[in-house]
Amino acid sequence: MPKSRLAYILLALFLGSLGVHNFFAGYTGRGVTQLLLTLISFGFLAPLVWVWAIVEICTVTKDAQGVDFVS
Image 1 (cartoon, rainbow, N blue to C red):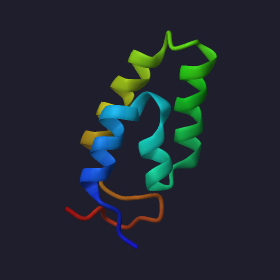
Image 2: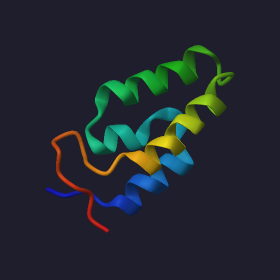
Image 3: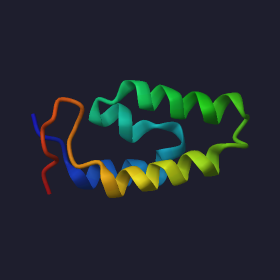
């Protein structure tokens, strides 16, 4: 089932440092990596992970199954 691009963007903007947007899109490995980087560093790396999430907003157009996001 197609996932909403707007939902992906909002999750990345507000919860990007926790990787929630990647869990939503089915990219579990990325989500776990982002979550662990933020938690293990006690939030010190959260800004870096958030920038990573912003880059993903601009570059990710499909979910983990290869289905395009819907507008």
